[in-house]
Length: 429
Ligand code: GLU
Image (cartoon, rainbow, N blue to C red; front, side):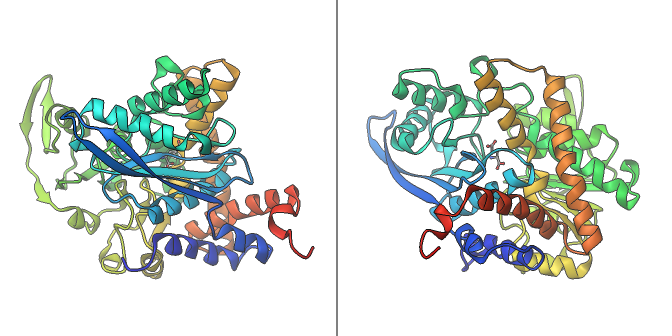
């Protein structure tokens, strides 16, 4: 892509502006991240050599509270990507009415190339480098692509060592034994599932008659595929970074998850106890999966999957964005013209940061909730955002994405206005 990701992301802001009355100064402010840092992290590898990694952390906007967002380990991580992801977090937290602004971080690497101890040294080194930029009331970290609870545990521990006191609330998505919340690992998938279950009946869609393709079989994609399968949806295609499988009669998702766990690869299998047999299927690429003739498409991998190059070939009627930014703004326009309903990332995948918020609350109060409490509150939060966003889209005839931005922007604008003029209008007023 020639255009910057952040420029594309802020295009969504422009679309929403047609519908919200908001001061131009506030909008101008929201187009730029508040603070971004880039750090180099020296890591001693197991073979004794030294390698320097590039890391980033962005605090996009903190009007509504400390900035909040994950840390991504991926070869494509760069400042532009991290800033866009932090921009999305700002709107996601506002849409869900969490008392947070938006942040994001990342390190450029292929984590599969590092040993576990190298990864630990790198994660601790990252915290050493950004410690003055983060904190439980400043900027709170969490997992994202290719980072997990184990890494969050190291990060929290390193920050606590530097502060000389236990600081569990600086990182969410931690292992449960050291302050993690029950239900955080399944939260993104479950949140998306609640949104789908609330939205699809509005189009008279019943699970048994609905086919679904899921791109991405990481934490969120695999879990959501299973929840949909359990609820009776026909999940006909899934994929991971290496490619996918398609079976029009539907796939047995628990078997595929079980097999993937053991073999690290996706296979169309049906397992009885420990015996797995291959079932009839077609091997497809990730691109082919997106263009399948299905009712519902769930991009749950990385950004920029549906662009102006393939948008006109998308056949699904409903898209639920579980990944951040899988559709470009140019592709949005093509899909809109085709009558495709796109339920946006800042709503659909917000379950993760919502339970991160619950984890932060639990860390600060010292009182830990049950799984039922977490999931019930998650459901409430997701519906409290999904229903009004849907009502704006329906009543004012705008795409659901624009409605989500309008809804979040109104809340952000109110916070900016209520906070006073110091930051935004310092000169001349
Ligand atoms: N990385 C996730 C996201 O993009 C979760 C962020 C968090 O829990 O703070 O929403």
